[in-house]
Amino acid sequence: MSEGAKVEIVVANESHLEYVNTILDTISAAAAKRGTGIAKRSPEYIEKKILEGKAIIALTEDGEFAGFCYIESWGDKQFVANSGLIVVEKFRGQGLAKAIKKKSFDLSREKFPNAKLFGLTTGLAVMKINSELGYRPVTFSELTHDEAFWKGCEACVNFDILKRNNYKMCLCTGMLYDPEEHATEKKTQSAWKKVFSQLFPKPKKKADKKVVNVKTKE
Image (tube, rainbow, N blue to C red; front, side, top):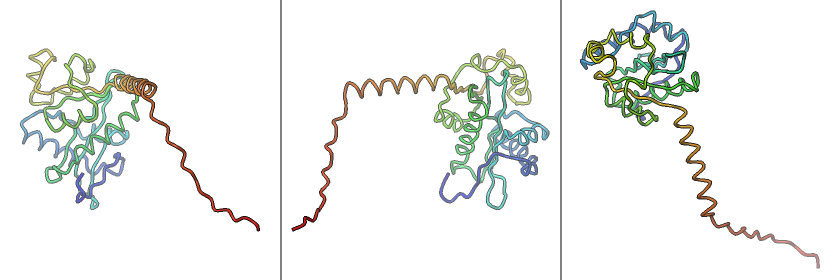
């Protein structure tokens, strides 16, 4: 976020229910302008996410809505998606989307530490943010097979493309964060670090001599 932006990003709660219609209107407007797919959600669905503590909202100091994102779990909580990421147009270009995504990512890892995080997106900016968080592009076959998730795509303008390709391909790019992969990577890095420290030990620093003035008795 730029220094001039005064926007607070928090986990949404009951006090934020008044923004539900604004959130949905912002998502619809963005989808219409871009001409790409953003799955539509009902007011009740967004309300539920807020009340469950599975949504992130960004507001100005004056309470003006600036952005939103919510968490969905699929396949018996084995897969988690950060969905509906949206930033009001006048607040774009300040790093707000990245900050909201990071907050949502951290919340997902906190609530579902063992789940694989995934997403579908057509936006290059979102792909870049996901990559920085450790996501990698994957085929749809590596994503959740939960029918309820794919049913949500029916509200997307590009659903016919997905259906024609037997749910294997669409305009969206699938991205996945696997906590096991990152845990293994960290262990490998730690092991190599230990090996190198043994092969190439750092020279020990000479102890600094401390001079103390002592008065002697005559």
